[in-house]
Structure formats: structure tokens, C-alpha cells
Length: 264
Image 1 (tube, rainbow, N blue to C red):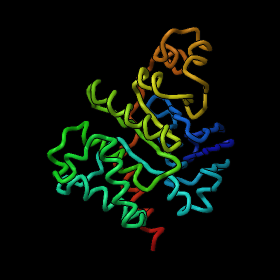
Image 2 (cartoon, helix red, strand yellow):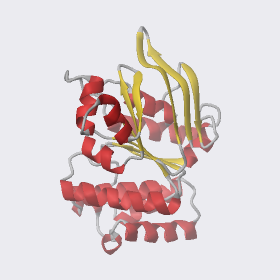
Image 3 (tube, rainbow, N blue to C red):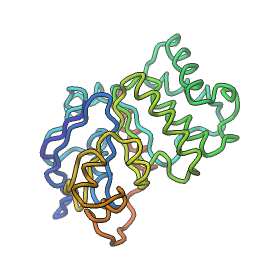
Image 4 (cartoon, rainbow, N blue to C red):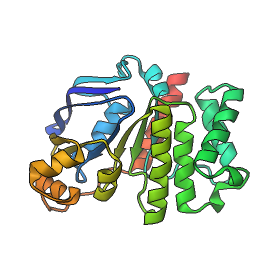
């Protein structure tokens, strides 16, 4: 479903992504992990058409996102870590706008809205303004919205950041149900290693622009001789504190701008 071959992105003399290759199968939950500044944000931007690779190849569901950009965008959904809902609108209205933007037929988007809001336990609050929702409810709505246009791939950037353990667990329960029911491929980033260990079928670890490990959580722990994924991650990337990466809100604004530009 996702195929990346020898991907490179340079900014002047900086190799932000350096010869990265991996594949993600249909229906797989793949966690892409790395310290701040390791290259994962740059990789996601290239996968989601926000950046053009310096060299290398990307395929999303058999499409080249650089050549077939608009068609590729229809195949995936994105949920960045910073909020992108309209708080003055209701849950249903936020879903409706998304469906219209993705040209989901009226009858189908109403059907999908009901199905997803029920799956994410938001149907009873569908007519409430989103600004009245808790943080966990907002995240559930954003992810439900990401599934609305029946994407083949869903990109989740730090989807549970700031949520309490109960909300995190509930959110992943819902995501896994849709993943299994609809065979949606999920590509996620997270700094919660226990979360990646629990939900991901496979993991890729990037550091200083290079993919330093990939495999099942168990295989990576075995490779590093550790008992937890957090210990394995530290063994692979070190314990030095890294600088924060660019705001994901900027990513979402950039994607929205490019999407609307591509539709003109």
C-alpha cells in the first residue's frame, strides 16, 4: 500500500532524509518512530504531497503522488497532532464539510457520518458544538472525519498527544476496529512507546535521516537486547534531547492550501 524506495530530501547541505526505504502492507498499522528532528516529519510531508523528494520513489496504493497528486490525495486521510476542527460547528457539520471537500456523494456521506460517529461513540453528541467537547472527544471526531471519504491509507501524526490513558486506550480501540473492518492502512507517529508496542503490527525507527531499524516490536526488542520498546528506542537513537520539529498545524495549513490549489 505504501512503498518508499531510496527516499532522499536535502535542504542545502542538510540531508533531512537519507536513502530511506520501507514498505507498508494493506491493512497494516505501521508506527514510524524517531526523536525530534530525526526526519519523520519530512518523510510524512513527502508521503502526503507537501514536499517534493530530492530523489527516490514513493508509491501510495500504486500511485506516484508527485505525478498523480490529486488522485493520490483522494486515497489517504490525514490527522495532524494540532486541532483542525471548527469549534463553532457541530460534530455533524464538521463531518459534512469534510465530505463535501472530498466530493463524497450526499447519501453516502450521511451514511458514513452516522456509521463513524456511532463507531467512535459520538452519535449522541452529533448536534453539539465541538467547542463543548473534551479533548478526547475532539480527537475521536478528527479521526472519524479522517475515515469519512473511505481512504485507503490514514496518516496519524501524534494522534493521542495530551490525552489521558483512558482516552488513549479508547481511541486506539476505535481505530483498530475500523482498521480491521475496512482494511485501512494506518501510518502513525507517536512518542508513546507503549502505545506503538501495543497497536502497531510493524515499526520503523528513523534517526538523523536514516532508517536504523524496522520490524515487529518483538523483533526490534530482540535486535537491541531489550525488554521494552522504549529501551529499544533509546538503544537505537541515544538519550540526547533533540530540538522540537515544525508545528503540525503548519503542516495542516500547508496541506489545505495545496489541496485547494490543486482543485482549481
